[in-house]
Image 1 (cartoon, helix red, strand yellow):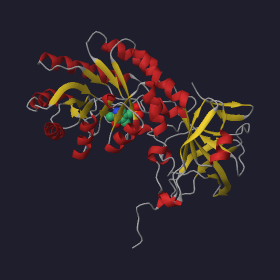
Image 2: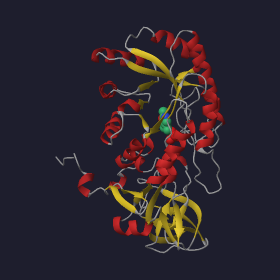
Image 3: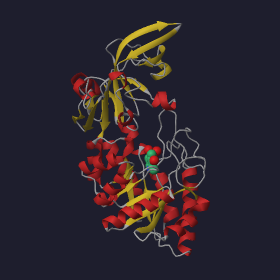
Length: 415
Ligand SMILES: *Cc1c(COP(=O)(O)O)cnc(C)c1O
């Protein structure tokens, strides 16, 4: 479902006119559709049907407390990558027994906090990490459930910054070495070697590499079981892409999960996935206001009040985001770069984009900004981080207020 549609020339999120939110909250401002987030979670959950499963939302994609609370209430588990994410998800009411902890660089305090919270499992990425978790679990007198993250060496065919499943990447343990790692890990008395995990990359526009990785991991599980390891769960990571451009086609969540279901069925395995982007990306827009129009060197610029500090994806990944005027303005008559106020040439939202006639004061919606949007924002150029709004049907509320100037200097001292 796309919750962003025009009704009588006014772009809405569910039943709320975005112009109203922009007028009341100001811009830049992120707006999320609650029903879209919950629907996407349910698409995963329902498609797994009767096989034991756990959908652990990768909260790094959007960790606003209200978003987490929605998903926790819907029954989601969570994939965390830091102690800060653990803190956030517990604040939002997430169930610790449905949390998995991923990441190559977990620190001792972070591991200890996760053990104290009683999370479901650690996805471990190296032998020293296994040893550290074992020692910390021993000190606490608990057992830690472990899945080793293996690197199946499949080419995820995505942007090289977000591809993670090849041997040259820092992630996971090479599939060929995995059995030896499990053998050596037997010495750790406080680890329960119960799972195998993988995550090959993000924004995959085709499910084939994901399914290929699943086959390789399932074959490894058979070999481990033959060696006497009691493998109970397989965590197949996240990575499913979304359509950023109108003509792009991505696998539907339900179709992808049905294919996983077919592979896992009958294996006595609990299957887990860690979707981030595919749950929240399409639920969100970033609202920005046109400040100026400007022509220079034969180029046309639309200068808006949102910048790379608010949404870094165009600058960081050359990402495309569709731009829609909040008040419909008819056909495209203008080709322009949409840029922000930050003092960097890389500060653009769109380049050479065909747009309708835009006037100062016009509000724009930068689409598909619900994932890796606000969470990657910064205060660069001493810009306050944007407000966030959650829409539920005809209701909306601010779920993070715009930062104040005092927020910008919190913790600093002018000696
Ligand atoms: C980033 C990440 C995810 C989520 O990826 P999406 O592409 O947003 O679905 C899941 N698992 C791990 C380990 C990750 O690093």
